[in-house]
Image 1: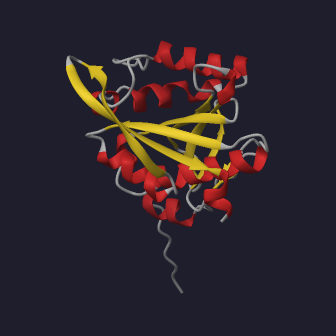
Image 2: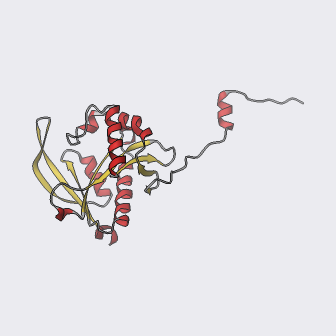
Image 3: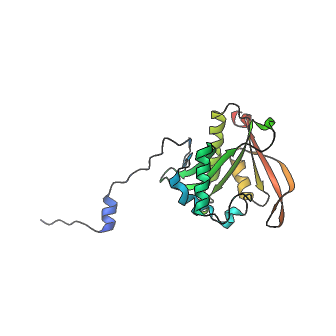
Length: 205
């Protein structure tokens, strides 16, 4: 009687047990395909690689560095960890791969806006077109309203040509509230800014 064994690397890989990624306890929101968690120092390289993309930066405010170096990523993570900001990394639930960033921050101005937070986000190019960003925005905003009873409103703005970001917000339940004509000047170009808002009753209705 003879037996055969397949000792090729492919066969060994097929026979090896697969390890399922474990979503960390630090995750503040878990969706169907993603989770959001505070940044860790070890995220810097993936953050820098994703953020160093001219196509991404062209629709960001000028405070967003471009080119985006590893030192910028370390600086941002240090800021987030020191200040306790509501800034989170977006990661795939299947593999824990870094996919983007999402932030809630106080708007600048008078304290009468204390019940409002401004939403900002970006998604690494390799994940575009899959609906990930709408999923992440929905997850964060629902978490925020459930966690902070004083929160009344979340707002976001987009450059007028950035129709993909406008679609993200609509899919997450935001309402288009108006246009600030020629509010933006970037790289010498005058651009309208589109305003969106989400209030607590929008998701409680």
